[in-house]
Length: 633
Image (cartoon, rainbow, N blue to C red; front, side, top):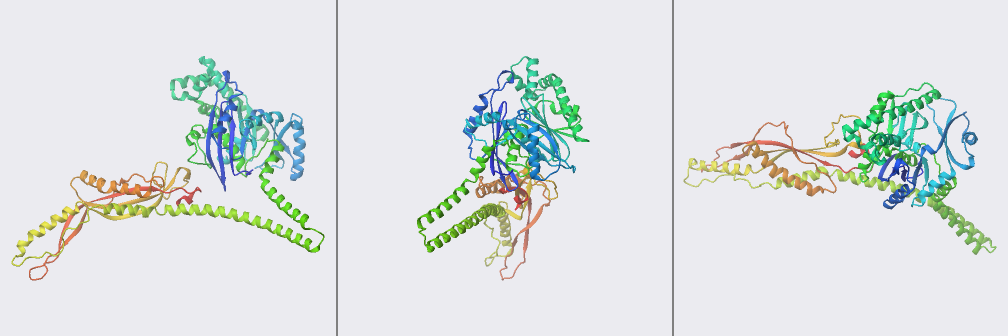
């Protein structure tokens, strides 16, 4: 479809409204915002007529509805049928589909809104499989009216299971025949995805049936039984009782699945299924995944996150993670509106579709009409039968044509300007990230500058006249002690290393040989390792206290001051325990004095015992607008 750049996707269920705001940028899709409005159901799980309308009003009131809105109609109230047609050209195929729709849809064709999808065959089949979908016009009119009365005007109407199918095809991308089950409050959709083909059936058992079973067994109110159904996993004893109670209805549920899969196999031929994916609030039922896996003999999966979609950090990520199985359908609707490869079924009335299409082109039409009006007005005022004036009018028409061409060129330049602006913003972030080593070294330099800088007197010792060298020798000892007093308050920087690394979710640097990295769970950072030494202070604790006070503490303060918490993240500075340096004996003073006669006594080297240590910390790089390896620039 890919008609829109940004959309709100809204799904109103029996007990809650779920919505996501999504944006397409090149070939990637990002979730910008997430919202959910819960509302009560009446006794026995009967849907309240007013509660969903109130939820729509609440949603529209707390969100900016500044982009197109795509909504979904419940799948159980939509007609669907799959037919086979011979291979013909596109125009003839459309005519045949129109004829078949009149024969297959069990209502007068002028009383329904219908659409179709041509399935892509992966097995080289000659015939084309067509999916027909229809809803009565009055049902769609009432459906649209509920939205419009609460401040929302739908731009596209999908079907619940079509949205789920688009999510599966875009994000899961199954490579073999797969069963998809969406367990809602009052209906369950079963989809079979088989390459480019799909098939859908509504099952007779849904979430409310399970809730009513719990309600009758434990003599509870409906809302109490619903709460136990979804939260029993927190209490093992209660979970065991609930699991025991619901087993009979779960066995009926399994029989429904077997019948549906068996029917599809009878129509499609030799098809082998291995995987089942569960979605909807019903997927959270305690023990359901294990029960289905044991009785269906399939691998049963409950997805907990996206594979190809990006989620903006400013959105309600916690809500999306907690309610993930229930959000698959509404996310799939957004994919349908934004992706070129989506399965596109639109039950919005044709006149509304034309109105939306006209509005999208309205600016162009108005500009063209204005240009035409100017030309006509000019001709009307100035044309007086003279050839010169007629020539002038023709020239004006040429100018108008030139302006039209220039307008197209300006639009193309505007598109390039937008792309260049995005590239410039990305380069600015790259340049900012590359300043990280300079920031770290400046912080380290400032830290080292904070240590004592005075040097002991290590130059030539003047021997007064009449004093022999033996009397002067004790002065040399004093100089050695004085140098020791200075050295014990200093640190020597031996090595400064930096490199760009990829950190996992636990803040651990990944090895460069690591393959198949999930970049959505990693971030780029700069790793800094500083090797330094201090003169032994006494005990090991004394050494550590000196390092904490004079090196680590000041260095952390400098890094916070130079990076700023709002822009860059600085990880805690840690002492690397497994340093490979042995104890160093460093030559740190070379004394030389002169004899009374001006001769030299030679160099005397004084050695001190030094304690080496290494520090490591990470400074996170600012992420780029585009995902992938480019983050490491």
